[in-house]
Image (cartoon, rainbow, N blue to C red; front, top):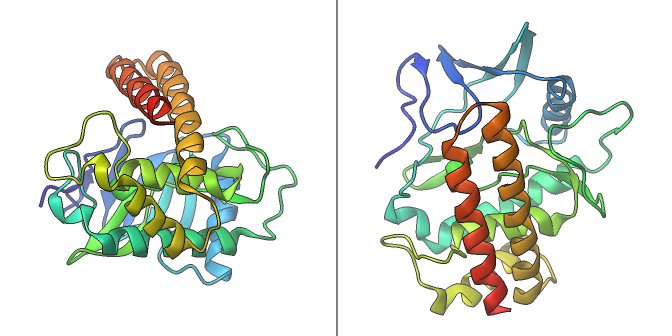
Length: 247
């Protein structure tokens, strides 16, 4: 299984927009004006019973320190076991737990890296996908990379998880299920989450989410001087156009 190298101290591979380094049972990441809000949110999740998210430890100048989430986080191209129905079901159930746990979080003076969306039903992870889930023996044991979280509708996260885990892409990755079973797999996610949304609802939000990702990737390509993000923006727009054709 190809995964982020979590067995030793040092830089962790797989991050696209953040430099991440492991030190023992902690992780150091680049911080920003949003970090105090994210740390307050992670502490809130812990109080609400979410034990599988990182625990905030400190903000140290330009970096934040979090607890290390043990497990293997798959890199692209995703290994074949990621496409199992159990990942869809467990991922959707955990996303529901995450969303429910965020209810009541105080938004006073909150600063977010990602724009808030309407309706602001819950705090969205905004990147809840296999590449940000930790696995042990193929089972989900945790989630990482909460720095992009912000208020938004439940379906915003559900649609993105479907985009990456079904997957809903113009080109089917090697070993992944094809679009002929996409509706069935999306409905598996919706049932496991407990959502009354439809397949069409998921496609609609997935398209908008992909355009949003493309815009953010273009902005970050300039801000972080990472030109490869322009290629990713083009991929997001290609997938969005493909899904628009399906609708």
